[in-house]
Length: 112
Image 1: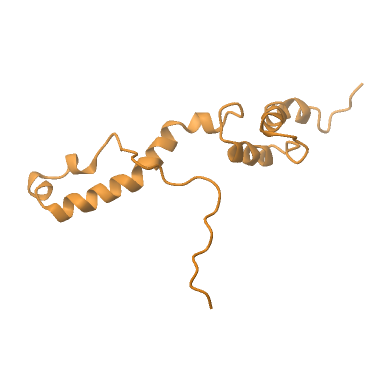
Image 2: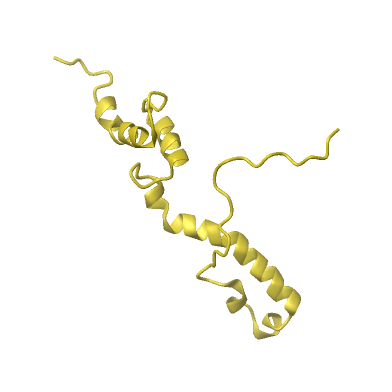
């Protein structure tokens, strides 16, 4: 049995220093806002929620193959059955996913 921590997985991580536009401490009664333990707890929740709010604010960018991060482009490609394995680089993958609707529109259609 080893005590070594598992290596971190590549991908999205927390955003250091991210701030939520809606701090929870501003929405509690004044008596609770004076308690340092409550304030620390709400600040911790804000730190957890900040990346979620940022992601939801930018959700349309995650669905655009020209703007999305490379791992999301590959995931989008798996949704629409794009040829993601043949892409040579990130730009090729973006082009393949962006053009997949043109290729799939012919699926099942007799081409004359």
